[in-house]
Length: 335
Image (tube, rainbow, N blue to C red):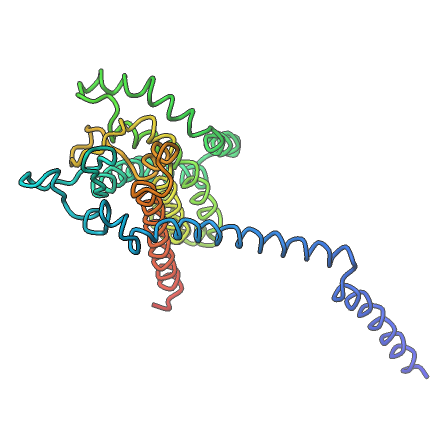
């Protein structure tokens, strides 16, 4: 009798503890409704993106299939030099409105890469070092000021940054360095870096913060200074997250429109000089799609540029994810 009492009590406690778990497993009608709403929203977003890609691809397909479009634009004319007239030397040129339309994409590709590379070279070191300082060295009051201030930069509309570059930064740079063209790849790249810094900073700072505190304590216990710990322990441990931040920043710079539209000069010039005016893929679409004749070769080429830009960013992100996964395996000792 003395042993039965506790057993019965234990069975009763087990039954009362299992009952709420069973109820939580089935869920109330509100839980099921919330789950259904979240699932519907996720599938709606995915379906919308798929529809956008299908529409862009459908409008770009005539580059390959339409004989009428082939007379003005085909893959050879898009990626190879084209002679304006018979007997003239072939050259890479973007002149869609002329007697002989020319749709060479190389000047636009070079302009896009020049502005993006300049932006990345400026933004990534500044953002990563600022994130490292904020997470490892800044006192609490400074961190509470630095992080919101940098993240607030992400809320500034890109058209405002472009206007600043157009009206203030371009004149200052031209007066300081004596450049021939006030709107060029450097001006556009600096403007793009202002849009890239918040993304890289936020993701990098989160990566540094997620590094276990035991790593820092172990490094300091072995005699390393704070800077040595940050540079040789925290930064390598957070390298997958930092790399992911850099990939996101690169994608942001490639796809930006308003800043390069206002600050690059919009000249499709094939040049290696960063002080020459440029034109990017996104700026070309924004500037010309509103006035193009629907169904013309020019119209389909612009959609092909959009599809090409998507493929470029997709491959960049894919390579970045592969590299991040490789770094994670290396840090875990699997590779």
